[in-house]
Length: 216
Image 1 (cartoon, rainbow, N blue to C red):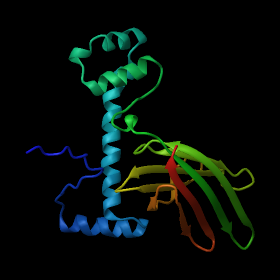
Image 2: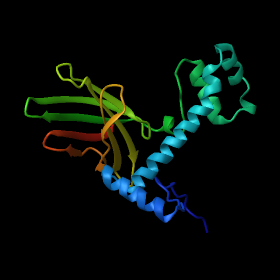
Image 3: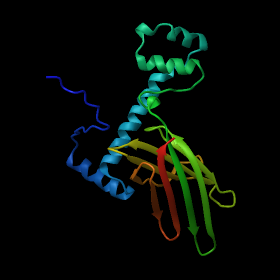
Image 4: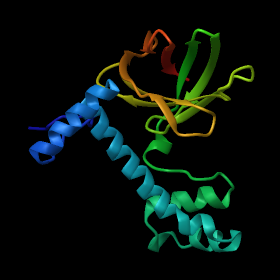
């Protein structure tokens, strides 16, 4: 009896043992950030894998053009991932990483309304943009605010396919174009092609972002 080929699952579960104290602290951190524990753990795994891939690429990125070419001409002794990375570097394409490099980019329509209010002033900054973001790779949007004491805001988006047409969207909002002043880090799940909204902050400082994610 032939067994039909099954498509690989879009996501898998793993079990990790941690102490009771670590679990409790992780749950508190998740509540403070408005996230789930699973989202935080997934983010840690993604960041670790990304750092490992970048470390693997460093010898190729530091090599001269001739050295990169020599590396490509010796594919038998080279791991496939490193071969692709070396090819990209030699052609001036920068870091090409697997498996995210083979995933199709998704289009993200982004609209924002940032407001800051005090007794002395009231600021409102609106923006909209369309980005192509590779799944699992953060995409960055910058919006300058020249008339404010804040030089601008940086928004980092990471999209990850979930079950069916659902997409997990990890959003990090930073105050400043280059700094690390994290304002909010919400995560939401949306259906492909449907709008999802994020509203964080307070009466004095509010941030609202509308997102629509679909194939680019």
